[in-house]
Amino acid sequence: MPTRTSLVLSIFFFKLPAYALVGLASAAFLVVLRRRLRQRSLRNISGPSNPSFVWEGHWRYMFNPYAYMFYEGLYRTHGKVARVYGFFGDIQLVVSDPKACNNIIVKDQAIFEETEVFRFTSFKIHRIHPLILSPIQGAHHRRQRRLLNPVFNVNHMRYLTPIFYGVTRQLRDKFRLIVENGPQEINVADWTGRIGLELIGQAGFGYSFGTLESRNDEFCRVLKEWVPALASLGVYRNLFPYVYKIFHPKILKIVGRMLPWPGLNHLMDLAGAMNAQARGVYETKKRLLESGDDATAKQVGEGKDLISLLMRASVAVSEDDRLSEEEVIAQIMGFLVAGTDTTSSALSCLLHQLALHPNVQDKLRKELEEACQDNEELTHDQLVSLPFLEAVCRETLRLYPPLPGVMRTARSDAILPLSAPIHDVDGQKIHEVFVPANTDVFVQIHHLNRDPSIWGPDGAEWKPERWLAPLPESVTNANIQGVYANTMTFIGGGRSCIGFKFAQLEMKVVLSQIVPAFRFAPIKAAIIWRFGGISSPSVEGSVHLLPPKLPIMISRV
Ligand code: HEM
Image (cartoon, rainbow, N blue to C red; front, side, top):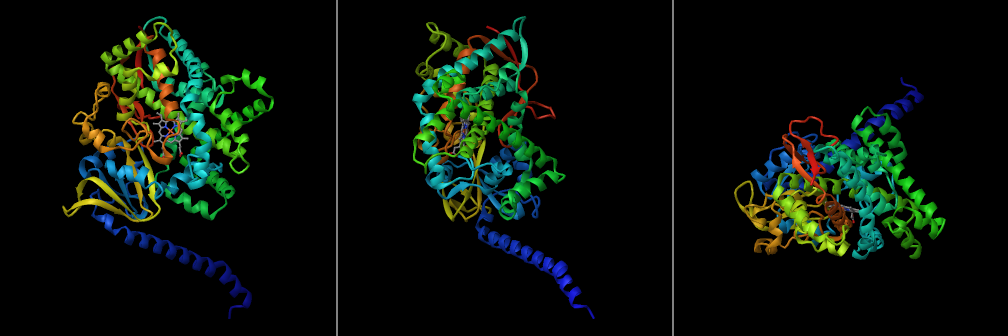
């Protein structure tokens, strides 16, 4: 006969945990079943079969540096709305139909919100405060945008222009030294990474990272590795929202460190480095602002940088609207993540195209030389009025969007109208797609921006001249509601890129200084532009994708 104590012990140690496990498993099964039943209408959408039901579906192909091949195949075989599989057979949609994309990003933005996976993996991993780029939604997000908008307006861009020139002069001097004794091969991706960080440092935070003086190379690497490191977690990122809801972040941090999972450990190291850097910038700024106007005037950027403005503006508003210390640090981190690698990728790509198209390069050089006859450094207004410079930037950002896609989740049932009907798996025409609540959708900016039915049969070619004539009617008719040049490169709606004018100005200042001074030519090896999270170049056949490599010959003009 079992004693009373052994009975209690067996219930406590064996039966209760077993019941709890069975309970949890049954609850998870019911959740999955309910979702599958609700998603059954999506099975009619054309798409590849599920390579692994239980675990990762297509995520292995969608989030790796070779993802561009998968998306290309998907687009060619299944068209502008394709069904793919995620975690435990979850159905997701990859969309590049213009009307459907407008609905997701603008018209129904209240329904299609940032995915939980993005919110949790990106920022909670290091327990940083919610920031504009991440979990915050609704009123909280609008409040932060309200505070940030003025620091990104055109007037402020005029103030920032001289800061951009200061940094770019440093780059030009470096290039001059490199080509002193004749043409040289340089890794453009490395240099654009350095200048991208220094520009955001000085103009964004009034802080020099010293990347053009060969200081802080390590931090450039951290930023370049962040998005690929996130993508490398693959489908396992789906677990994060659940574990974060159940366990305390401190426990997760300790457990995360102990897990034999190099990808996660690496991501935590990167997040730690970014957090420390962002805190360092904040502390420096705070000290300077507290020491008064004289000290601020002497710092890099003379206190006109975005974060100084934000901190001052934040003091001036009511207590409820004020950004807390953690929120400002979060903004710094957000700008670092959102504004460095993206601009670096765009600039690299533009210089690559100029190297491949010497005629375009000459034409751009001529326009810049003529404009700079009286003054080597053009004002903001002069820069934005140069038609060919504008055309070259637009064409690059259209054809090679640094962020090739964004992800959203339908918070409630939604209907996606289509600009042209698609055929379901039975060959029936569909004019709209019913999207059940909790379905993830990927807006495929890369394919939308080069769609031949919008941009014409040469939509996939780099032709800056297309912007010098009126655009075809098909572009106007597509009515793309992105904030930039009939494209979704910076998306649209309430979550559009707040830094899109900043990014364009960076690109234009850099080009205005280096194109008249140097000639860029391709090397023999082919360059491949890969994307998983962010577009980045590498030499064809190269196994090492990080750091990105874009070798180009540079010589004096
Ligand atoms: C060529 C360069 C850039 C590109 C292509 C780009 C693209 C984008 C895209 C597509 C988004 C939306 C992401 C999503 O919703 O999932 C975004 C958001 C954002 N970007 Fe950019 N970006 C660029 C440069 C910058 C710069 C230079 C800054 C800051 C100085 C910046 C700050 C932000 C912020 C703060 C958000 C979040 C906005 C919000 O959630 O309200 N970006 N960007």
